[in-house]
Length: 320
Image 1 (spheres, helix red, strand yellow):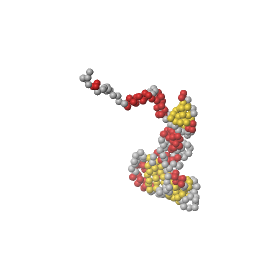
Image 2: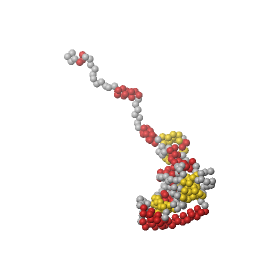
Image 3: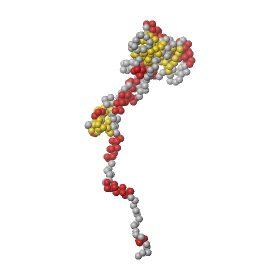
Image 4: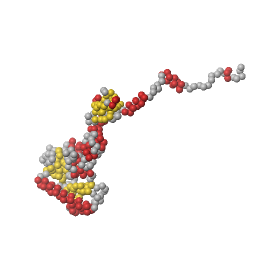
């Protein structure tokens, strides 16, 4: 019987492991009342905790414990807290206007146990909200927590479904939002229209990164564009890659192009080496014969004596 479960809780849909002591077993999507570091909260069971889930969460620490399963009384209290959140949001937004602060209130969260009220806001610059917190604490008679968020966090709080028709990834299973670049979209040959590859947050979709590691691994196995390859059809140049299919488009002499599987490539020649070989063939043949080369080497190794050979008698000018 499992003694810990993976639970999703809070407005930011945090996923963590919670312990449980009791004979009851929970199934997926069961609603539970939990105790976290913030207080008493409402949670949803995802699955029993295992070594695989701990590896996915990159943590073996437990965030708290499950107190009990949600009963009718708990559901009634939850409905009351949701109604209170709407009232608090309207009043808090007016208080922010009265304080003339340059910030946008995105969402609020009233904990199930009533220990605190969390305010999520957007701001371009640092905001001094010390007086605002005092006013909010007096108005709502609760502990106030202010959390500045970004546009991606805003989508995590407010967005519901993505273009694919499924719940947004940031609000369902992502524990962290990794950076996404246009390089990932280009490699997967996705459309470069920002309106089609941007998520609810206005940034590039997180799902563009899901298959990027696989594309990168396959791409390294294929010869890059411009590489000279030798196939059964002859020698040609790679002009395009079909990464997932592990094939390349090869251009042969005469403008003929064919899609070639990676297994059909006999050998590859780098574009630089092919260029140097072509340049070498265009130069005139300046090679010398072995005899000539030997003579040249001898002439270089032996210095020439420019003095005239004479006998001792020749050196005497008085002799007839």
